[in-house]
Image (cartoon, rainbow, N blue to C red; front, side, top):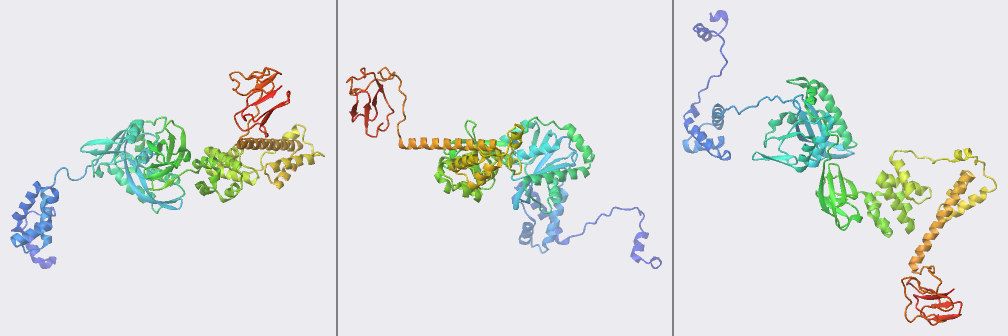
Length: 604
């Protein structure tokens, strides 16, 4: 039979004597281990005793092998001991707690977790954080890139994900994150900002046990899945907003093709999630943390290891700093705005807004040459400002500072540079209007042509013989205003006579205003007394004043000057009223020599 079948004779003998040929489970027979079986009781005794000692002080397989060799004279190999210990533990330490359970999450629940990744933002390689949120009922996934895991960033990221989904979840499952809350000995302690976020959106938060990522396995798996599918290769984007837009479009594409293992296609199951979620409140949550700070003598505050400049005008004061995910708002204790700065998370970095430094050169124009604000200004603008006089050096930065409040510092610098190129010193109105136009993306132009208005009014006749006189007026007044000759000549011939006449009147009024300012400044420097109008002609001093003792009119020899209709007046207590240091009475032709420089007599 063996020869006919071509098999071994022993096989034929084995199967011919078997009565039951039904299929049997292919269970491996236990091999005999004569080298270790006689030491089994000794090994099992050590393993049983280990159950009553701390986990880190139990016998390892290596320690059991060493004791067998030293105490029992074991001559076998170390792998044999390892196999015996492993089989014993697997056979006796299995329990219902081992393994994993498949969970069926109710609609409206969300899990969140962080992951790390690298991206190139505006040419700089950055280490960023990926906040991932999943809805395990539908397997829908959303993510957003953040700069760090601080409470402000975490709450801002959750609020942004709620906006992406369109509704707020009823339950958010989180790991043991310090910035949201921690579970210690079964008790959860939430951070203040996260508690305010939860109260704002009215959702319930549940924290996992420490080192138990399996309790939110959907979010744990989604972190790696989204990182492999959306962030490989390393993305290169111009800004963080562009990166988040790319991530949002990628998440929507993935969700459209995803499947829920228990509930069918993800879009259909996500509709069930949305039906169970809550509507968003009318006002979005502002993830900002307000802290009390103290500025130093330069106007800098310390916020999380970063120096933020409030400006020299806010030096040595108690201030409030609103630390957000992307911005820092600084104000005084009464709510007056001081500065708005971008948020930085790099330790030791200095953050400042050039607009907050503008009041310093306005108050001290002599220090503009060494001011740090020059680092943020273009070279062409600095060349113009270095040639300004002291008064204009006050006016130009003041106009730039007011324009930067509404349009930004860069737009204000461009507006000022353009005004300087036109031969004008920036003022509040022109600099603000031009900066707003630049900030809104308006193109450069030649301005508004009023010739059509003049023609409609019947005053559009060409320039006649008075044109030369008007042009000379414009040139003379403009030269006194420090305008260039070529620009004045162009202005004098471009418009209608009405326009040129208006320009000449405007420049002449500007010259008169500047002359009056210079005269007033000169009088203040010389400290000369101002002329005072007589208050009465009755010969009596003004009401509320008395004639000084020992000072009498040289004609009446009386303290009130009752004779010859003299009047008494008192000038401001300043320098002598006459270069000869005397006061004369025209009626009596007499002089009071050596009189006090603070008083004078005058006769009607």
